[in-house]
Image (tube, rainbow, N blue to C red):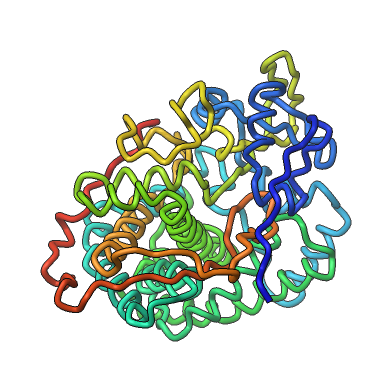
Length: 455
C-alpha cells in the first residue's frame, strides 16, 4: 500500500502551537515563524517552558552561561522530570534497583564543574586525534555506499545514515562493528525518552533499555581500568580530572556513554545525513551545482543541511535569576527552551532562510552546533562525517529520486530532535569505470574545519 505524505499543519494562532503534537513536528517551521514574529519569548501553555526563537536572542543566551544555566536543565530534576515529578522518581528508583543512576552529563553542568570535566574531553577530541580519524571516516562511507550502490535502491536511513556515524563512534569507543545495531536500539530508546512524548509504560521501557546498555558497558569500564588502551573510552575511564582528584565514576561514565557519546556522537549526524539526501532530491538544481564542483560547494552544503533541518530542534537552559526579555519576565528557576531550528531560519539573520543556498555568505553562522562554552564538542567530527557521507554519494551516484509511494516523510515523535524514520530512494549509479577509488583521495586534505563563526 502506498504511503501518504504528511499534511503540513499551519497553526491558526499561537494557541494552536503544540510542540508535543506529532503532526506539527513533521513541519514546525510555520509555527517557528509565528513565534519569531509575534512572541519571541513564548510561554508554552502545555509544558510551562519559555520558548525563545530569534537568532540574536538565542545567541545571547548561549553566550551568557552565568544567567542561563545548564545544570538542572536536563536529566534528573530537569526539563522532562519537571513535567511529572512523581513519575520521575519512579524512574529514578528503577535505575537504583537495576542499574546505575546517571549522573549529570557534560552538557548538563555549569562552570567551574563543566570546565573541569570538558578539559578531559577537549584532550580526547583534540584536533590531531580528529584529523587522524579522517581516513577511517572516508573508508567507512565508501564501504557502506558500495555495499548497495549496484542495487539501484536503498533505505538511505537504515543502510547509510544510521551505520556511518555509529561505526565511527564505535571505533573511537572500542566497540565492535557487529554490536552497532544493539547500541542503536539503546540510543533509540534513550532518544524517545528525551522526546518527552512517552506514556509511563513506554518511559519505563526506555529506562530498562538504558540499564541493559549499562550492563553491556560496565565490564568494559572494569577491563579498561585494569588494562588501558588507546581508545576514547579508555581515556574517559582512566584520565584523572585534576580538580576532582579522580577519574569519572561509574554513574558519570554511564551518563556520558548514552547522552554525549553514542547519542550525541551518532544520532544527530544520522539525522543530518538523512535530511541532506531529502533536500538534494527536493532541490535537483542544488544537486547539479554540488556535483559540478564538490571541492567548492560541499562544506557549505553540509552547513546548510544542519541549518535548515536542525537535527537538534531545541534544548534547555534554566534562568539563574529573573530575566526580562521582549517584555516578558522569565522568573528565576524557569525552564527555557532554546529553539535552535527556529533561530536558524530567522530572516533577521539569514537572507532567504528557507532556501538551500550553496553560495551563502558565512555558511557556518548558524546555531546547529550550539555556541559558547557548551558548543558541541563533537562538531569537528560531525562535519567530517557529513563531508565524507556526501562526497561518497557524489562519487558513486549520478542522480536519485524518492521511491514512488514508499515514503510518508514523517519524523519520529520528539520535542527536541528531528529524525526521519526511513527514506526509500532509487538512484542511477555511476559506471564502475567512472567511480573514484577512495584510496586516491587525500583524506587529511579533503576536510578542513569550516569552523563555528559564532564563537
